[in-house]
Image (cartoon, rainbow, N blue to C red; front, side, top):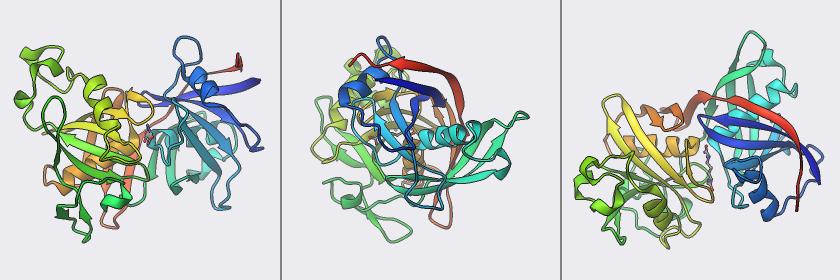
Length: 308
Ligand SMILES: N[C@H](CCC[C@H](N)C(=O)O)C(=O)O
């Protein structure tokens, strides 16, 4: 099988885009894994197929697949890159300044800005309303708090691990997220840090602790695991993504973390989220919707012959 592709990223969270408007492309898990392989393939956190929308109000349907071949309901950085693909490759007029993307989690309206060549540079996405009820995340952890909207939710609930207990606040942005605020890293065991004398979010061994909780039974559909520190200048965050491992950024994860920080009283409801790949601005508005703003960039395009 031979394919044309375009490689794009949002704050370093990167994707292989393939035009599948005919809706005929079926890729196996092995082919997805090969496309995402950073040594033998193109290299990406996921694959996004651009398909004809079911909702006529939407410009196109974004079919997002994690690098392990599993489907995900929503992808925030992916939506901004999706908008860039649609604008830059003439599916949408750059002058429109707005479009709606259809996803498995529903339509996601967005506005975008373009450069002097009419190429999209950033987008602000309406990420919808966070779902907090345990059965909507989903998690088997019991609700222990009530949100300002009267929703029972899981706040800083302790889950044990080989390295002691970690506390999670659970939020769905269409996909499941568990946010752990590292309020006191000194309490964590030295073995979890590359430099025990300088315990920090940056030196936390995410491949061990993230993988453990991604697959924990309290998350029946697995979960994206965020570790965050609320600081005066915003929220620092790293993410171990369901079906991908650590990524440089996660849009839905940044939204979930902003919502969790607000719900827990650690911050207000508008935050700059600082990730290894860049900064995303998230706001949980009075209308209950979360707005996410951030960049989108094209790395390269090409043609590939899949070996499988
Ligand atoms: N990186 C994506 C999230 C992908 C979520 C996926 N890993 C899942 O299984 O939910 C984002 O920017 O929102």
